Amino acid sequence: MTKPMLKAVMEDLAAHKGQWSEIARELEPNRTVSFYSWLTKLAQGRIPEPSVNRIQRLYDYFRSKDVDREAA
Image (cartoon, rainbow, N blue to C red; front, side, top):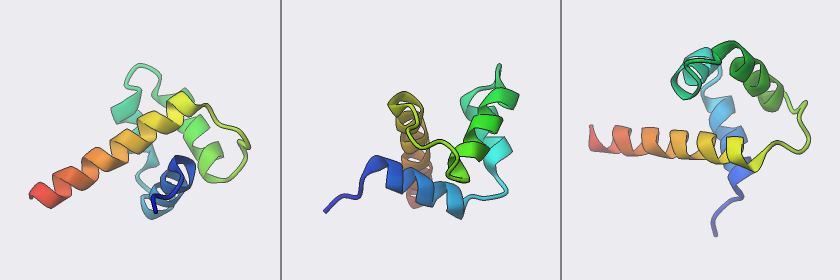
């Protein structure tokens, strides 16, 4: 059974704590500060109903990193 996307993203964020600013830079190079702020709030559970678009972007980001690691 596949876990819900939000749960997977929250687990990925927890596993990559300390790398959030890098993630924000990669996903939002022109708005890094605001995305980083949102990302930290999400990871801390302070956004109860996050945008599915942003969650999808994070989900895709982490899955692509998994594929990169498997290929290496």
